[in-house]
Amino acid sequence: MFSFEAVPGLITQLTLVFLYLVYGVVCAATTNKVLQYKGYEDRPGWVIAALFFGLFILIGAAGLPLARDAQFPSHGME
Image (cartoon, rainbow, N blue to C red; front, side):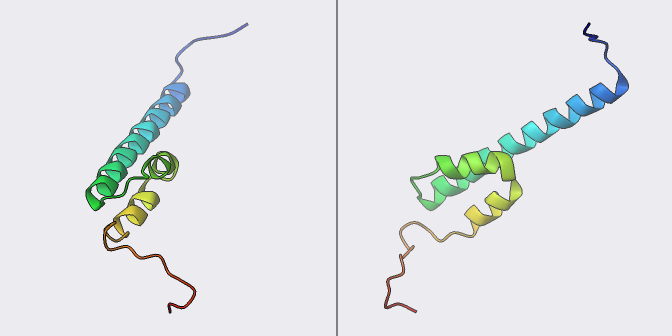
């Protein structure tokens, strides 16, 4: 019923899945360290997003200002 033979196509697919998981974990860990360095406390959402979107989230986190310098815009600000 089921065949558990290791065919070349299957090994290639499993290797690509493994590499994608490693890439996601590395991006998530790096994003966590960047946000920790910048002083942000709400990191889990960013880390989970980095697992799926990788480098794009890391670039976004690197572009954030330091937490102590960040300002929330009000209605009167331009």
